Image (cartoon, rainbow, N blue to C red; front, side, top):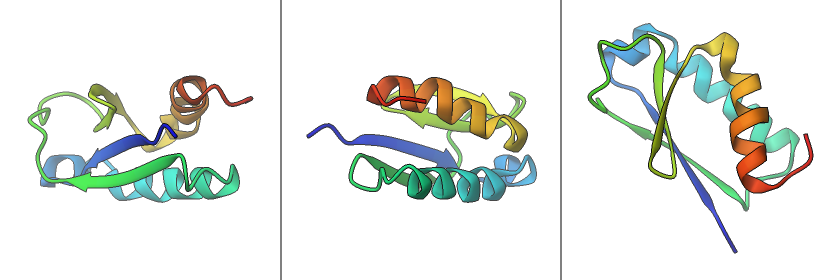
Length: 87
């Protein structure tokens, strides 16, 4: 079974940009959609994207920069699409 790894930067720069909120939102969405067996959420200290806007989020090796307010749409259009799940 395919398990998607989502890594959220929790370094100081991303922390100031709202990484804790991004984590909480992703945890809620994974639980709401019952995807605990398909998605692994991880934290990582500095991922080297400090000067970019938004929190650095890595999905299976592809990096994104998202804000807490963009997290739900990111989940719908990137994560669910990759899983082949209905929105």
